[in-house]
Image (cartoon, rainbow, N blue to C red; front, side, top):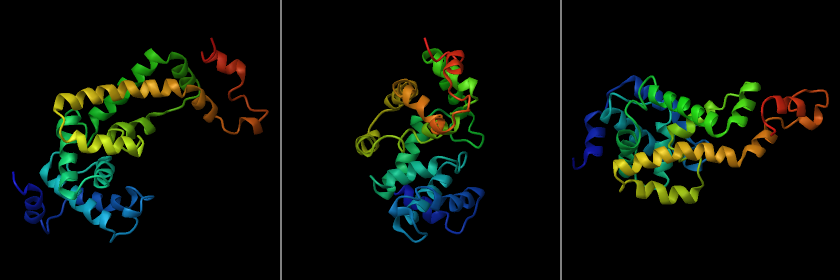
Length: 224
């Protein structure tokens, strides 16, 4: 529909909703380290508000939920305001499975289960290590999936991906999505030694600690 974005904003001036209240709460904490989004009157904040508000009226079954603000804010760094709105629509309607951004985030939570199963299959030693020390990595990976990795990959990748994604078919998007899940496990595999190191950054200062002692690492299945 021509001018759909403008019409959505104009037709809903003065209306209120729970989604709009949550949007206002999240605006300044979306990209706090980016100078476009520092202050309430910054141009980035004004545009972000309009994009998210228009989307909430366009997709009332979704409204607004976690992750949409970061998707829109990052898109606004590379696209104009209206294109950022349609990028958000494309991600929700075409890229991700139905219900991914619903109130309960059921589909996105299911993805975490899929990722854990893949980790257990592809990285059994690392999985055993995480389980042994009760490390829950889902708060990190959950955000990766909600934002379709756009706030995780380098800026150079965003420059290529975000504009071209507007011209991709749904099948292409879903293939990228599936590849992304497998890429998560591949990335963790490549960085497994670094992860092991980072899990106990103070180990050299805790000589009496049993964390990461060789015998326990071996019992967790880390060593061959």
